[in-house]
Length: 426
Image 1 (cartoon, rainbow, N blue to C red):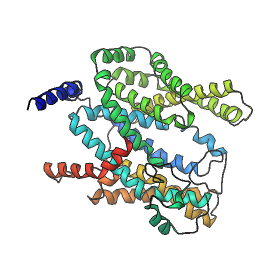
Image 2: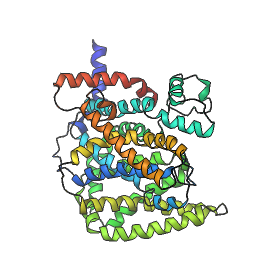
Image 3: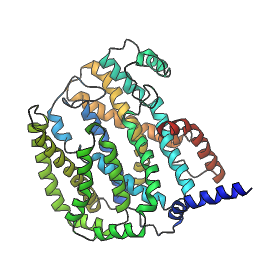
Image 4: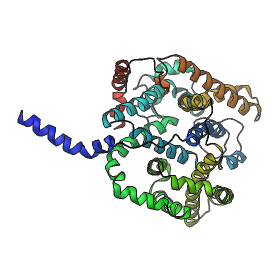
C-alpha cells in the first residue's frame, strides 16, 4: 500500500508541469477564418503540385509521364519553397487551439486516433497503387494491380526485396509522411509545453512580436538557416516542419504579429517576387550546374530558405487581407481537406499510370488527370461524410448524433487499432 502511494505521488509530481499546462483556463481568441481558408487552399495546392511532379524533368517522383518538361519547374518554384512551411505553421496554430480545449489524457488519445487511424488506413489501402506504378516503371511488373495487391500483404514476399524502406517492410507512408511526422512532433511538443508556455518565454515572444517585422523575420530565419547548414538535405523537411509547427504554436495568439503582416503585405509581395526571380536564376545557373562551387550552392540554399519564410509571411498576410471572412461552404471545404490529402497523390499516380498508355498528349493528359483527381477526391469525401464507418478512416469528424459513451468507446477501439502503428513510430 505504501509503495502504491509513493508511486502515485511520484507520478503526480512528474506530470504536474504538464497537467498545469492543460488545466489552465484561457480565453480562446475568435475563430481565424483566414487560416481556415488557408488550410483549404494549402492542401488544395498539393494536387496541382504533385500533378506537376509527373511532368518535371529534373525532380524525382514515384511515377513519371512521357511528357517531361523542365519549364514546369519554373512554375513549381513559386510554390516549392513555402508550401509545406505554411502547412506546418497552420498545424501549429491549430494545436494551440486544441491544447486549450482538452486535458492531457484526452488530448493524447484523441490526437493519436485522429492522426494515426487515417495513416494506418492510408498505408494499407491508399498508398499501394503508388508502389505498383513505381515498380511497373522501374522493374516492369507483369501483373495486374489486384494481383500485386494480394502480394502486398505478405511482408516477406521477395517481390519487394529492393523496396524495403517502410514502417513495415515495403509498407511505406509515401506522401502521408506529414501525418507520421505530425503525430511525432505533437508528442515532442507536449514534452516541451511547460517550457514554451512558461511566463518568461511567453513574455519574450510578446516582446519580439512588438518589434519590427524585419526583426521578427531575422529571429525566425536564423534557426532555419542553422538547420539547413547542419542537416542532411534529403531529410531536412523533418526538422523544418517541426520548427514551423513550433512557430505556428508560439505565434498563434500574437495579434501584434498578424497586424504587422497585414500592414506590410505589399512590401512582402514585392520581396517575394524578387526572391522568386533570384531563386529561379540560381536554380538554372547554380543548382542545375554540375560545375557550381560549394559556396554558390550554400548561398542558394540560404536564399531558398529565406524565400521559404518570406512565402509563409506573405500568404498569411494575403489571407488576412482577402480571406478573413466566413462562408456557408467553408466548413464543408474544411471537412474535405483530410480526405483530399489522403487520396490525392494515389489518385494522381493511378490516373497517370493508366492514362499514359493512351498517349493523350502533353495538354490533354494533365488536364484530364487534374479534373478527375478533384472529382474522385470530392466524391469519396462526400461518401465518407455519409458513411459513419468510413468517416474516421478518412479523417472526417463523425456528426454529433452519438452519445458521449459511444464516442469514448469509438476512440477506445481506434486506439486499439492504431497501437501496433503507434509502437512502430515510437
